[in-house]
Length: 587
Image (tube, rainbow, N blue to C red):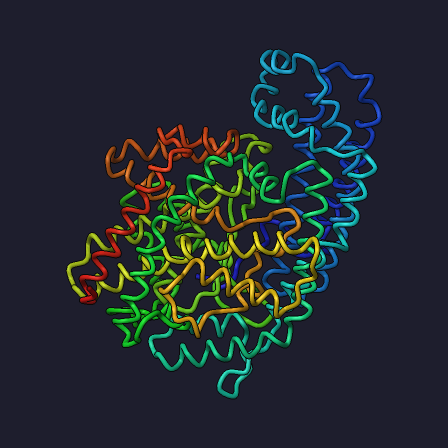
C-alpha cells in the first residue's frame, strides 16, 4: 500500500504533452464560450439552452481536471511554486468567461415558457434543475462588466489571501520541546494518551501563532470585506443569505437546526464536565484535554489496520461502499501522513474524469484518524453516487456535502459500540463518538457565532489579531459555557481553520452540524428499514445534485424544517452522554 496518492490518472507533470494539450483545449473552449455569448440574440430559445449545456459541460470538464491536478499538487506541498503558479494562470483564464457566462445566464433567465421548452427536450429535461436555478438566481447577476471585474479582482483578492493563510499555516514551525515540527504535527498531539504531552503541545501551538497572526488577520479581514461587498452588490440581505442561497437551503431549515442545537447545549456541557471529572479536573474541561483518549484508547493503528477495520464494517452495510474503500487503499487514492509543506486537516477531492477520488489526511495512528478516513471516504462514496448523473448534475451544496461522510462515521462508531463487550473499550468508543459530536455541534456552533460576529463588525472595523482572538473567545464561551475551563480556551481557532478563508464559501460551519444530525436521522431509518433502505440512501445522495436539500431529504421521507427531526438526532446523542456519565460515575 502506497503512503502518498497517485495523480497520474490526471497528469504526470505540467510539462507533459497531455497537460499542454488540455490547456490548449481549455483556451479553445473559452473562446467558444465567448463566441457563443456574442450570438445570443440570433439563437432560438432551444438552441440557446442546448448550446449552453454542451459548452458548459466541455469547459467544466477541462477546468476541473486542470485545477484538480494543480490543487492536489499544491495541497501535498505548498512549496510547489509551479502548482501555485498554474492555479493562478487557470484562474486568469477562467476570469475571461465571467462576463460571457453572465450574459448567457441573463439570456436564459429571460426565456419565456422555459419550462415548456425544457420539458420537450430530453437533454434539457435532464438538466432542468440547473437551468431553473439560473432563472431563480438571475436577480443576483450584475452587469457583464461587473461580473468580469469581480472575477479578475478575486485572483489578487480573496483567492490570494486564502492561499496566504494556507501557506502560512502549512509552513509554520512550532517549537516543541526543542524540536521544530509542523502545525499539523503539534495539533495531532492533542490525541496523545499522555496528559503532559497534550498540555505542552497545546502551549507550544498557542506560542507559535503570534509569528503569523498579523498577516493572517489581514487575510481574514480582506476576505470578509470582499464577501460583504459582493453580497450587497448582488442584492443579498447578508453573507449568510448568500450562503443559504448557494446551499439550496431554506432559512427555516437553518433556524430549526440552530434551535435544536441551542436546546441541547446543556447536555454537551454535562458531558464535558463529566470528562473533566474523569480526568481529575475540577469544574470545566481544559481545552487541551478535549481530545484526550479515555478507556482503552492508547492503541496505535497502521494504515493497514485502518483499511481492515473499515472494510470489516462497511462490508456488512453495502458491497459498493466496501469495494470502493478497498480500491481507495489499494490503488493510492490517499495521501496519509503529515510532512513539512503539506496542508493540515483532511479533505476528499472528487476526480470526476476518472470516476475516482483523492483523499488527504494527516494520519498519526489514533482511532480518531480511522474515523477521519471513514469521514473522507464517505465523501468519496457520495461522489460515486453522483457520478451516475450527467457531468453538470454532479455538484451538491454545502449542507448535504457532509451527509455521507458523517453517516460513515455513525455507521463505524455505532457498529463498533454495539459489538463491544469490554467496559473500558466501550467507554473509549462512546467517548470518541461524543468527542466528535461535540466538535460538530458545540464547536461548530462557536464557529458559526464567530463568523457571524466578524461579518457584523467588519463593515466599520478592521479586526486586529487581538480582536479576532477576543471574538473567538466570546463565541467559545457562548457555545461551551461551563463545560470548559475558562482559563484554557483556544483564542486562535480563527487562524488555523481554513474554512473561514474562502471568498465564495462563507459559513462553512453549520453544514457539519447539519450532516451529523441528518446522518443520525438517516441511520435511524436504516435501522428501521434494514437492507432495502440502502438503495433509498444512495438515491437520496444522487438526488443532491439535482434538488434542494429539503427535496433531497424528502426522498427519505424527512422534513428538514421540522425542529423535531433535529431534536431526534440530538436526543440520541444525549442518550450516549447519559451512558458516558454512568460509565465514569458522574452525577
